Length: 319
Image (tube, rainbow, N blue to C red):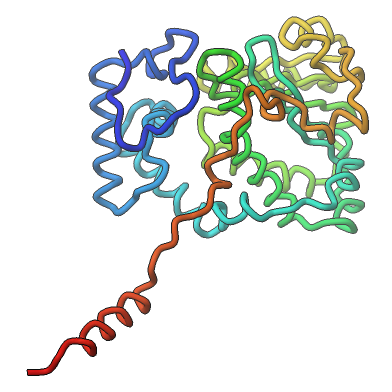
């Protein structure tokens, strides 16, 4: 069943998940609906007023196996991080003017959709050259760009994809090209990737639909077979480790016309697929202005309120 709507559920796209998976929107149990309401109520009591919509709370609950206490901790930690990182302001103002130069050494971009309608995210880890990149940008700006793109995935990318597909899409299809990655890679590369992965895992839960690790180096599959024993089976089923013969598998998930030529597809956007940002979020029929771009309501500061009170008191006639 669907969780009861709340005043926070202001959606302009489909809100029912395409597959009847437990705990997903449109397929929740009465007990799960109660946990959504419990989590929302407890967060309201702590003073939170944003990101309390049902879809968001369900993602946090699914990430913590519907343990309300753990989901609450995760949400609170996320909100603290958002404040410290200045995320709400960042998505409105950040400009990555050095993007084209940085992408020469580390391409990471969203590009069109897979056969299920989800945004495709491509990252070429093997091309990372941090020494060259740090002459162009900083680690801080790289992470700021990463976070800005996560925010844009949530809005406008996924809502536009959901409208076009006629069903709720909450995840993306990720392609990680490992060509060139090896044990000789600079340790600092792994340091950055670890930071980026932590942001994704801790603050943007339940966004991975499928992950294709292509051009995996020799021995990688053996290592992964050991690692996956410690991973959640649901997560393991989303991950596909492929060597250099990946094209058939990739084309089974991503239409050729949506997949860049370098990965076996037929797409070659003018100016390069990595800089095109092509997808339903750029198509007028499906795209809408993201909510974070709308003018913020002005709120009075305590000082302004005090001045108003003083002015009113001064204007009152004395006895």
